[in-house]
Amino acid sequence: MDMVMKLGAQSLVVISSRSTCCMSHTIEMLIQNFGANPTIYELDRLKNGKELERAFVELGFQISVPVVFIGNELVGGSNEIMSLNIRGKHK
Image (tube, rainbow, N blue to C red; front, side):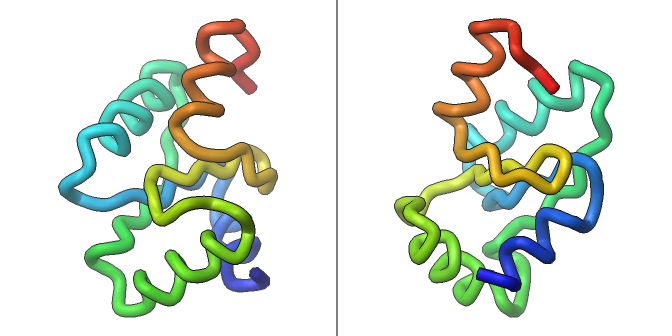
């Protein structure tokens, strides 16, 4: 879990994704359209990507991406981000 939280502290907005995931790309574009410049970690291209995925599962996430941190807070995945967007509560 420490590894995941350190990942979230790397910048104001951090997205863990996979290079081939269309939902990850959609969330990345949505966040960028709000003027943020997220740090993006593509788990399928990282040496410790599988280890990070296991850590996300331990935190209660299914093995799915994206996983988004905003302001060092683990916000969640695409459902949570889309819900925030729909309700107009972008940070």
